[in-house]
Image (tube, rainbow, N blue to C red; front, side, top):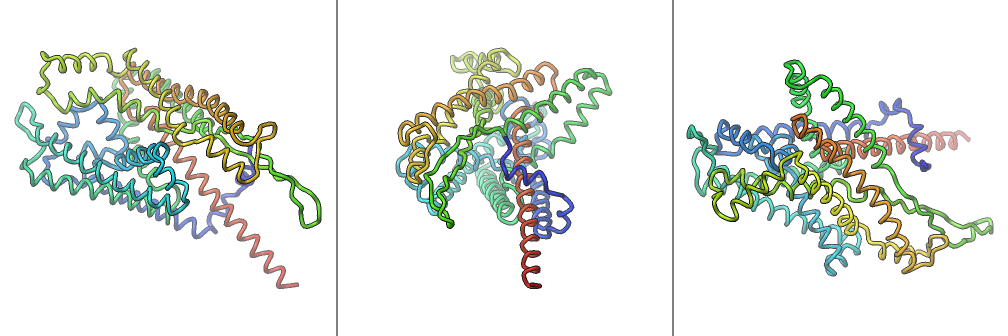
Length: 454
């Protein structure tokens, strides 16, 4: 059932868009920042050999390297200044959120309001710098160790100076992206970090589309497969758009209060519980864990001793964890389901929600406040998380199966579709909110003018 805000937003006219000067300025500012982001993705790290980097990207294709490169808009393939993208910030943010749910001191900070959130954001930035330093150093070492059979190296002059310069450049590039994201959130439209990730994914769409239709023209991809793939993408987009807005709304009742006319009136509201509370975190975590052994062996190259016990184990894992293999698909689905429940338990605390309702004299009809309310919230959240986990598994596993059977690149996987659709829906909702606010401002101004005439 649509809320009153959704009903009002659906009746908005885009004819008011031309009159919303502030909204247009915000949109143009956002577009300008995203253009700067795309320019930065083509600025290479100092001291690298573009030919060697290109050959290294071809060699590492198929592992977690492709997924991270997708999130950075191809910056990782080109080893640009923003090769790490905002993924270290996402990882640090997830770690801080989990720590805030498990550690008493951080949990107390979380309850302090704006001051506590500012402190947690500061910890997240410290974690981002730390992760960027570690990842940047290992990335620089991996670039130095690459040399193909023809003797082409990815680094012109290997050594500690290159490593130091690469780490400083990568840390600076990631922190500059975070600053751009904050500027979009404050002065633009939408969530800045999410828009940067989406822009990186969408930037690869022309290449993907051209390769897909070129394969159909040359006969390497059957026309029926192309049509089936396009239909699958459309169906998944519609499914994601519907499921991401799906909510279970619990009725919250408040005691009767006296109004200005002396009448007793009971207040009502709804507690919305999203069907997919975990968002895109479960498929990212599950795919990262499964692709880790393959990526390690790819970066190690021929240095892995297949005769040793550890080497043989890694080689065996690579054989069974290839895309499309039954074991990989099964573990991927189980990983998504596990992280759905795990991350939902981290971000939503039924006991804390029940305590807040009790403090505000709110209650769920038929449920006693306190522990009974917390148990009921946990029961409802568990049931809807089952549906959300099944939905995420279908959205992520079906494209993986299609990609494995047809050989189509990983670009339009379930995770990328989830990110693009979620960010698009959120941005459109914010545009509608700005248009709605502009419409109300116009009504208020008209009412003031009529009042002056009287």
